[in-house]
Amino acid sequence: MRHGQSMANVKGIIVSSPEHGIDAYGLTDKGKHQAREAIKGWPVLDASTRIVASDFLRTRQTAQEVRDLLQCNTAVEHSSLIRERFFGTWELTSDKNYGKVWADDRNMTTRHQVEPVEQVLSRALACIAGLEACHEKKSILLVSHGDTLQILITHFLGWPPTRHREVDPMTVAQIRSLNPAALLTERLPVKS
Image (cartoon, rainbow, N blue to C red):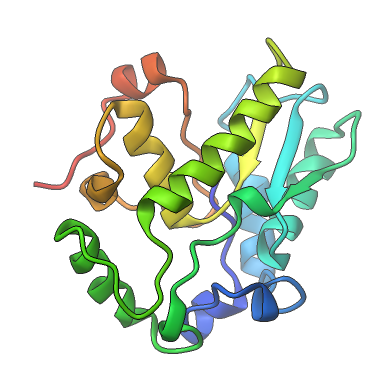
C-alpha cells in the first residue's frame, strides 16, 4: 500500500531524507480518509493482518489509520528497509524532478546522489524475506512509498528494477498485491 496524500504531496515537493520525512510531512485529512477507504475493497485484510510501515511519518500514519479500521490484534511494525527511495540533491525540490530521476533509471544512470534502484530493491526484499521467515501464511500489509513499491512490483513481475516506471504509477493509498500469481492475473496496467 502506498501512503495516503501527504503534506509533501500537497506542497509538490520531494521528501525522501529521514532528516525530513520521519517527523514531518505527515498525512492530510484527505490522506487519512484515503487510507480508510482503500482498505474496504480488500477482504483478505482483517484483524489478523500484520502491518509493516516505513518509518516515515506519512506511512506510519497511513498504517495506523488502517490498523484502527481493521482493529488489528497487533501494533504496526516499522521498518527503515521499506522507506522512501532517497532522491539525493533533489530533496525538498519540486516533485517535477522525479521525471529526471526516472529518465536516468531508464538509461541505467544514477546521478545527483539518488539511491540506485538496485539498492532500493535489495533493502525492500530483505524486509520481505524477514517477514516471510517470521509470518508464514499470514496476510502482511506493507505501507510504503511509490518508487519503493513499484520497484518491488517489477521484481515480482520478473522485470529489471530500472523498468519500474513502465507499470502505471501507484496512486495515493492504492494497494497492490505482491503475490507474483496475483500480479499476473490482475494484469497490471503497463504504460505503452
